[in-house]
Length: 436
Image (cartoon, rainbow, N blue to C red; front, side):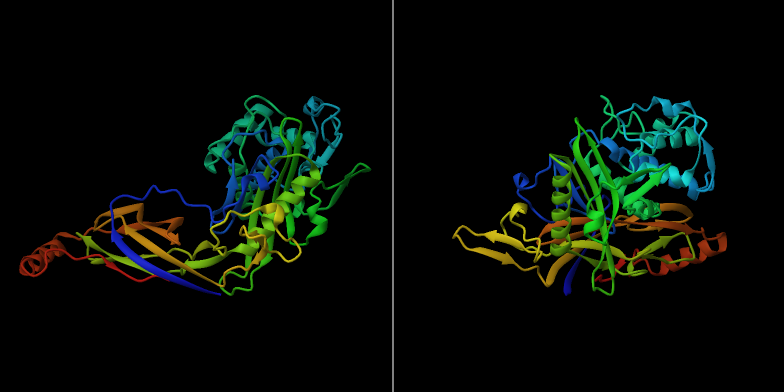
C-alpha cells in the first residue's frame, strides 16, 4: 500500500485553470440512471460522473437543504431541538397526496420530531413548518435556501419551494446535490442521526425509511431519497468505512443517482457505484500537517523569510484501476467487489486493485516576494496533483499573512546591508522544499 510521490516546483504568478479528471471511466449506458456522481468527502474529488451538471428535478432531495439550514440554526444557538412549535395554517398548503406527518394547525411538535419527519418520512408539512419558523414565511426561507446553495458553490441549482414539489424553476444537479451532501456530513454531521433511522412514528403513524440500503449495510447512514413523476427515483447515498490505513483510518463517500426507473433500481445502482469506488480508489496524504512548502523573501520588515506551511493535512484520492478499458457497471461482481473485464478474446477477467500508485505534485509559488506591511489572507501557492500524467486534484494553499513593517532605524540598517551586498546578491530567492 505504498504511494510513490514525485515533486516538481515552479514559479508562477497565475493559478492553473485545468479541469481535474475523474478517476474512474465508466460506460455511461451501463449505469441505469439519467445522471449520477461519486464524490469523496475528504478530498472533494469526483471519482466518476455522468450528466452530473445537467439540471433535473431534485424531488425530496431538496429537503437536505432544509435540514442543513435547520441544523446550522441549531449550531448557531438560534434554534433548539427541544423547542416546541405550534403548527400554523401553513400545514394546510400540503396536498392530501403528498408525504406528510398530518400536522394540524394548533398542534404542538418539537424541532427534533420535525427533523425526523423531514428526513425519515420526507414530510412536506415538516418542511414548510421549519421554513416558517426559521425565516418567518416560506418565500423568505426559499431565498435563504438559494443563498446557502450559492455559498456552497451549487452553481446549477435554484429552489422554488422547501418540499421538492415539481416547479419550472426548481432544479438541481447530481454534482450540486453531492456537494450539499458533503456539507451535511462535514458541517452538520448530526443530520446522520436522522438519516440512519430505519423507521419513525408520529401520532401512531408508522413509516419505514425508503432508503432500503440502511438495512442491507451497517456502514450506510444516509442521506435522502426522492421521487416525483418528473424526477424519477433519486437517491443521495453515503457510507463511512474503515480503510486499514493509519494516515486515514476511515473514509466517507457520497453517491447521487437521479432519474432511475424504480426504487429498487436506485438502490442497486447507487450501491454498485459506491462499492466499486471504495474498491478501486483510495485516499493518500499528499502534504502533511504543518509541512514546510516554501520560504518567501520579505521586503521592508525585520522578518527576512516567510515560511509557507500547509495549514492541515492535504488528502488526495487516487485511482487503483489501471486498465485502458471503460468499466461496465452491469458486470461488476458485487460478491467479490471486483471489476470484471472482457478484453475481446471472450475471457472474462477479474481486475485486482493496484497496490501502489504513482503521483507527482506540481507546486506553483504565486508570490516571489512579500512586501510589508501585510495583514490579509493570500493565496501563496497552488499544488497540482497528477496521476499517470492526468490532473486529478488542485489544492490552493492560503495563508493569513501578518507582517509588520520595519521602523526607520531598521530600514536604514537594511539599506546599508543591501548596499554592501548589491554586487554579490541583489535579492533573496524563494526556497522550496520537497513534498511527499
